[in-house]
Image 1 (cartoon, rainbow, N blue to C red):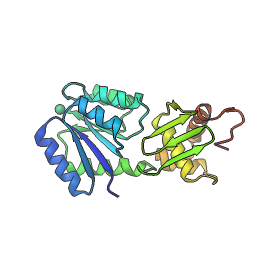
Image 2 (image 1 turned 90 degrees about the horizontal axis):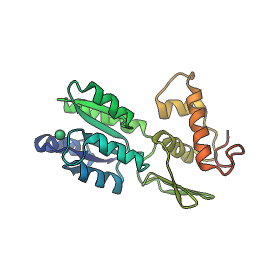
Image 3 (image 1 turned 30 degrees about the horizontal axis):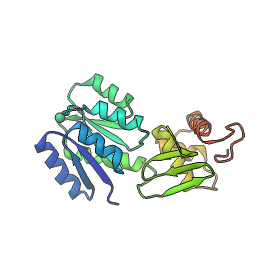
Image 4 (image 1 turned 30 degrees about the vertical axis):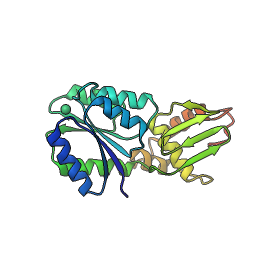
Length: 216
Ligand code: CA
């Protein structure tokens, strides 16, 4: 599948080791050596996943993560943190990271986490641009605009939207959405789906009360 991974890591030995291993696993790897370069690449190039170290020159990983999300990008982010930074892990996930790994770690474990994250993501770069009336969804850039103005969708909202676009015209059961996007098997969380569909409608529809794009 050749997913694109951005590796943001300032420690050369670790960066090189990970780069070699990720390439061997079939991923296309781009690297950044500090937070500034990492943010530049993360917000200007389409990646399927970003591996982001926390302690970096110029801008730290949390700062980069927050900025990427504030720019409306839904790219999955895996944070590399240091042993016992419990507080940091919580902060990282609150900022919109998808997962974290504590250094030192086994590379095999990192690969397993990467595969798990990429499996959760129901879209791939290159799915194209879709127009729905005044709404335009640019999947490779993870951008959604309405009347040319950018909409700030959360990563979940964007994933939900992409999932529904792929199945346009079909009825998608809540339980399927939960399993595919949230990884839940139980149906007790259907309110989660309803809440996200509701917030998507608020952002996309002219009259959220009389939806024309996303029908129940
Ligand atoms: Ca570092």
